[in-house]
Amino acid sequence: MESGRPKLLVVAGEHISPDVASTLLGGAYRVEVADGRSGQTGIELVAQAAERGFHAVLLDTGVVLTGAGLAPTARSTIAEGDPGSVLSAIGEGVCLATTDGQIVWANDRFKSFDEQTRTRIGAVCRRAAQQFEEQIIQQEAAGFSAGGKFEVASADESKYFEVTVSLVKRDGAAGMGMGGGGGGGAGGGGGDRVAAVVWDVTQSRRTQQKMDAIDRAGAELVRLDAESIRKKHVVDRLKLLEEKIVRFSHDLLQFDHLAVRLLDERTGKLELVIASGLPPEAMEVELYAQREGNGIMGYVAASGRSYICPDVSKDRRYVTGLHGARSSLTVPLRLHDKVIGAFNVESERLGAFTEEDRQFAEFFSNHIALSLHILDLLVVERCATGETVTGTVQGELNAPLDDIMREADVLRRAAANNPELGAHVDRIIADVNAIRQRVKEAAGGPQTILGAEKALADVTHDPLLAGRHVLVADDEPKIRQIIREVLRNKGCRVAVCGDGTDAIKELEASIAAGELGRFDLVISDIKMPDRNGYEVFAAARRVDPGVPVILMTGFGYDPHHSIVRASQEGLQCVLFKPFQIERLLEEVRKAMVARGARVGAG
Figure (cartoon, one colour):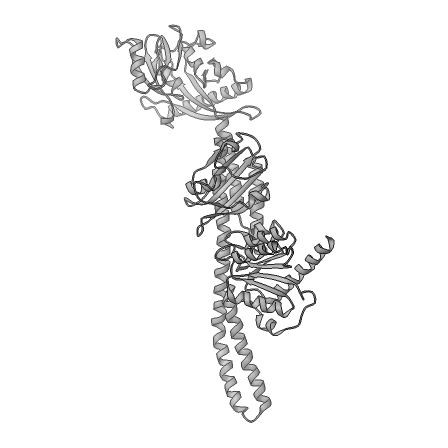
């Protein structure tokens, strides 16, 4: 990029050819030429160059590095008649070669390359000379100047170089002496030469390779194989994504301990979605997207700025994380320029994270945000599809059910004097009404439970469930009432709560009353207006580490990823509304068996 190269003023004179100097140095500098016979002193020329923003001045008697308008920061004077040593002072490798690739002069930096690398660069010079000759034959326009860029790697590919080769015409004009400090004679008499400037691009190449690898990993995060996705419900999909994020973070970024939190726009809370290597107390910390008082992740989510913490003991923003953590790196999760959460990694070493780590983490976090967004879209699509399908079925059944009811009315009139036939007609009408009700319930989606009517009519106690104490939390009155009555019919004692806050209070009250293990089972909805399903799950486990928990959600909706978080810690199961009541009873029985086994083992 033109603006990225330093500016060099070449003050031509008796010993310096501006054309040759421009050819040799044009790849590393933006070269401007001044006439050294203008009558101005070298000091005046240097002063003016500094004022004009030049980084260096090449004089017929020396070079002065000016620091772009500041006081001179470094000086390297050369003897008159020995301008070639200027090229030995610059940081890039420079060489002059014959058209057959023989190196006839090189600066000190070039000589530091290993022999195989120098040979490869010589071969590049030969190939470039051949290309220049072909181009000149094809284009004979006045002032034509040939040049080209090439890439060269060391033999073991531990180093990568970018080589810019230019053609140097030797047509009798004053040339630049290459003897003395340059390390070798010009060699070979007359004829054209090629000049090469060699940049070590190892770091930038490795950075690009790392970025490409992260890009491929990001593509893997969002790759959704249709067949495998159909076989997985939301829990499995999120677990698969979590495994990939942890694996890629370790393999590509060398991050062993990480946390991903997503922003709940309604409350501003940063919900912990994925964690690896963090202790339970760090996972339970509540953070909000606020610049102050909510840790580094809260600051990053609120400001949208990445944050490198070289020493956690000296950073007032740092809150509990990895045991023995000494440094951390936190970057925002962005989706379409909108901050949706934060990605945090920690290390047991001081100052473990660099600006390059920040760059890589920011790049990878964009892929994390996109992959989580895609999973959310799949959940929404599932919900919308379920509502659409059930609504369509309801509409399609209306016409034939209406026709059956009309025929039943005809039969009812015909059976006025036939009680037995009338009973059959009444059963037909009842079945039609039952079909309408069940389809309506299915279309109602998460607001209902299938098969509840039959279960409510069955008051037979189940010996496995009799006397068991169950806590039910759901903000939908119909749902919690159905579950309460069905479980009571089976012999359970049931406490119901209308939201997550009341459920957590009920659980914590059992500790205050000295009733550890008061509840044999907790059943909770995931999406409630105050506290989510994971918070109820976590509270239940704090009260009684062995208590089984069943979570419920509508069409797989899980805005806080409670399912993944609770599944990591022993969740009994997840039911997706609308579910069959028999499925709930089956899972309750399994939970009681597991509960009894744990108690017996204890």
